[in-house]
Length: 325
Length: 189
Image 1 (cartoon, rainbow over the protein chains, first blue to last red):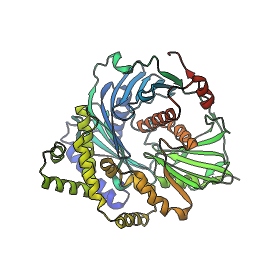
Image 2 (cartoon, rainbow over the protein chains, first blue to last red):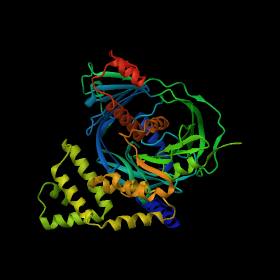
Image 3 (cartoon, rainbow over the protein chains, first blue to last red):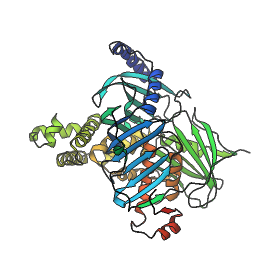
Image 4 (cartoon, rainbow over the protein chains, first blue to last red):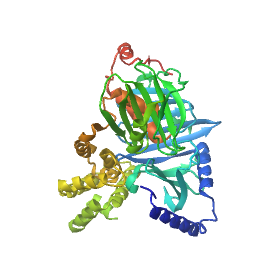
């Protein structure tokens, strides 16, 4: 994993020193890591671009054509998978169309936040907690553009790290890696080519298909989530994680209400779902990509922890949950 | 680049063997090559390249020569590390670059994991997209709404795609409504 030992930390310091030596030759740009992150946040929210992205996860490479524009605060973007099922995701403000050519289907859903597909990092302020160090590790080239490479280094094994390559000119993230154990990327999103601030025609933001006769489906609005209080707490939650919300949720099958407790360390999030257990199944762990889950039954309740964190984290959180007396 | 020459069928056989051997032993290089091949395909507008498939197969064959005990030993080493990571996690984290270019199925590693985890009374599995654990998929979707990362959003979209797989394409909208409690929109928005 990333700099988890003193030796590694020393290496990181050396790398940082190396950066300062290198950065003096970098067009006079002496921005701090925090300043780079601020530039990145601004760039992600305001930059118009189109290009090709290659995403690596679970041993698979997948390429996407991407078009993105922001006008009067309204985000419009189109992402077309160049492989597999040819999925197209088209966003116009809060309305998102997922277009599945192989099924001749369009699924319409609503996103209630201002995030974009390529925010690349959770919107939480990563300086929220103190569980990570952010370092500048050097310069590089991505998609033919000069970049500065940042490393977000977790202090322990309970969370993943990041490497981020930011365009020197704009601060836009041209490449990100989610870093797991063994210091290897679990997920990588990288622009193979990009045109920043290029003029984007409206026609570039519509579907490539004529979907008039396809099946259109609205994702039904779920019942309104209510903030609730809960007597479920964790007594061995990894350091830095704290409860940021507790809500009541319902699954689409109309089952009983369950409690959704969201933990965050400022960058990584873990959801804990507490529901009545209808069975006494064994504990179960699973994963999709870099997301892990651990489910177990405690005193007649099924506890499931889910998050883009290592397996040990979801397991420790799930098994530490208990009802406050 | 040697890889390019290999994919184009222009690398002499003795150099090809060296390349395959080196790739089978160097995870970082494998990752770089996977990335190189993927980007090259995109730039050329290709979705697959016969030469890269051949390379993949040859590296897989090279690795297959490792005795099974080597694999088991590596698992044991991981379990005795600073903390005991579940083996399914090992399969993902340590082998991602390997899987990227060789296309090994995760289920191979998970089979080992399942055997080793019996004593813990824990079932370990990959959940994806075609998994029939509907509730867990729904929980993943709920969690993805707490994150605006591309990965979460894209995973959610692919989960939706799998739900579409489960119903016939030419389905009566009324029966679909009964089955999924999802209201189909038959008119254009």
